[in-house]
Length: 412
Image 1 (tube, rainbow, N blue to C red):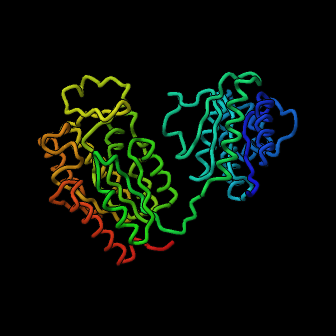
Image 2: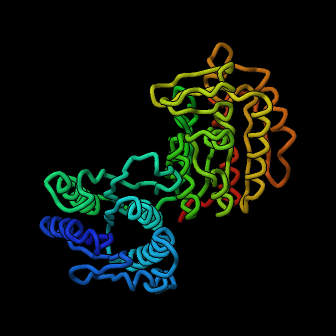
Image 3: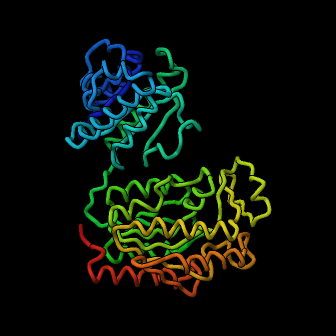
């Protein structure tokens, strides 16, 4: 197996022993390390491969300027900037294969930026005292980040914290050895969806798209999936997108934590990627299972999906707002956009007799969709439900036209 190099990042002035322990564990398993010190005030016991001075310089600063910046928050943000730039640069120069970062709240803040500087497929492990904490907003997380709680290790080594540190060392090295990094040899269509009890078009579309020579990456539109979708789109990673599940946009407008970030529905357009879009499940607001439903939503149609997620219906005016926001975001696109509007429903539970059936609110949404979309965005209404085969066939018709005229490339 090819020897792999792991970038080990942390404040070596205060966590030297813990970081060196991880270095030793990686070496014991046959890996190599590249060490980066992101300290500000102190120095490591032994020089690191990348010094704190290198990090500050990468942020167009100096350690003295970092110290003089005012407080530890501003200081660490400068170091986070430098560490992120250096990490990206050194990965592009093939100097390492995965990264592991150690920290409390300050180090974790920096770690999140460093991980976001790397593309999907690069192993990213964070050992943190606040792993899985509500202190970490979802939008700070990179698409394939891994975290482990640094239990009992804030001040020095012990048998408990060695358990976390050694697991992280083994995990990042193992991931670097095992990972199949995306090669970009086959064009990818990015698709958003939900589970098949709610949205089912992907079951028809995936084999049809593969028969046309595409890979199909389906993202679960429950917050983190939308963020991953947007991060790949921002890098121009799709030949085309079929963005057919939009609950994250409605959730964002309603203030739900189950959202895909403020840039949802923007990055494909910015990158000029052709977009096929439909408002799947844009009639519901999702809540975490542990949340109490706010009073304003108590009299709405309601669907309890499982113990993790539950949904209340949006009223007519709220649905009009989602239609307007959808149009506003797509209007910024640099590439072609074709909106498909199935006028008989946009998710399985909105059929007559379903938990989310609200024909009056749906009629308001449909009315606003008809009013709001303007050229060059194409708007097409379909006499079907989003889960009917006719919807998937209509999407394929548009795609085939785009393939024929060269809008969507079938090679890379």
